Image 1 (tube, rainbow, N blue to C red):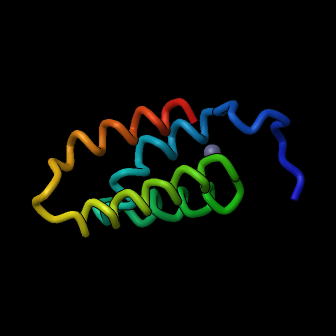
Image 2 (image 1 turned 180 degrees about the vertical axis):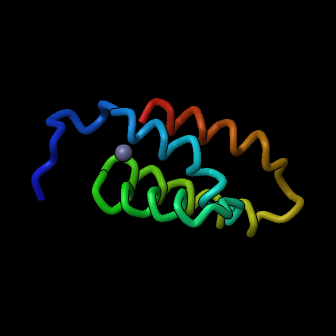
Length: 86
Ligand SMILES: [Zn+2]
């Protein structure tokens, strides 16, 4: 339960790396098993990345549900901004 960082919104280099692959991972496009394992390990240990992954997951599910009604990019951009400020 202890975290090496006191500030949850401070990203370390592991977080940045996880972020690089997070979208591909959530889209099932990350094929490298090592990279997948690394992300999953990181998400297991990093609360802030885990929260973000949850948001992304939710977002993906909604985009798939919304069909052709809304242009996915604009919604994605809006939420991306939201997540950036998170
Ligand atoms: Zn992290």
